[in-house]
Amino acid sequence: MRRTAILILVGICCLFYNAEVVFAENSAVFRIVSIVPPPVQGGKKIIFVVRITNTGTESWVSGEYSLFIKIYDGNKNYLTETDKIRQFKDADPGEVLTANVDFDIPVDYSGTYHYLVGIEFEKETLFSHYFILKILPFVAVPEVKKWTGNVQMGYQDDQAVEPTTSLNLRVVNLLPHGNYLKFSTA
Image (cartoon, rainbow, N blue to C red; front, side):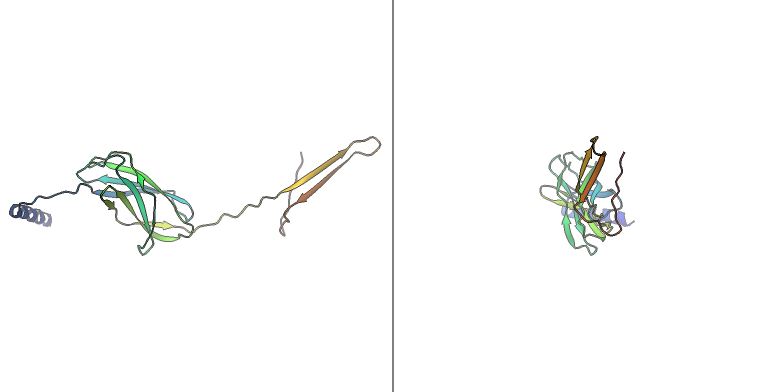
């Protein structure tokens, strides 16, 4: 009922004002397909897989539009954005464009964030609604120490002297308490 009333109102306005109902040249519907790899963690790379439907009246011409992601904090305050990725595929009205946009998450990001998907044309930019992005805290990988040193071996085989072998090992770093080195021979 309400929809009919709006259509009738638009029709009446067109009759009296000789106006036309104009559809936007560029409009879009944004859908997020997935975020790879889940779960998202600070310090890692995230890949946003987005689907954008061209709901406008004009085709999106290859090379003339770019996609990007804007990142916001939990209160929807702008933080940063990804690089703009130029798209090289035509998208006719009604066609769905699927694209990947990657982002290196800073190590200090943790908690609930928001993001918008943007598509930029020469004269305008369209944005999606806010999507939620949950980020797990950064977990530092323990540093693996590399031990260096040198080995000297000597062998003496003389009939006058008994055969002997000596092994000297000098380790550059001192071992912390409770750690040890293991050697094996074949």
